[in-house]
Image (tube, rainbow, N blue to C red):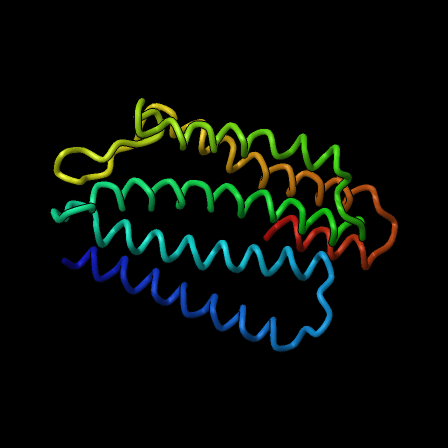
Length: 185
């Protein structure tokens, strides 16, 4: 019970804080640049991640009709939103660093790991490669969880390396400070 209360508090607090940030940010900005839209996507995906995390903890082990299906869908959305946050963060860092959007060819190349993850999520019900929900409606990681982690961390590490590279190789102090701050976030 205590751990459920802890998970509830953490996810609800995170959910509320992110909603306040989202509302404040949308209230303050009038025009919508690509950078602002991507930032909104990151906020919305993070809000979804908090919601899915809360639902997963709350429903884990509960026995009622359709709970098994709900847990599978929520886990799939949780996995996908976690990876999409990393992908959107990479886009955001690129735009903040280079003041332009990624080229279409590069975007398509960077979307390949997401497509692989989507395939793994869609086939997970049959092979339980990423996760399994057992007969007691309890979540268990599958052998493919490492692939999910690698794909998710790939985007974050790539964004950090890109920011550090710009920090090291730029002469302008303002751009250097901004890139360094982005790399440590």
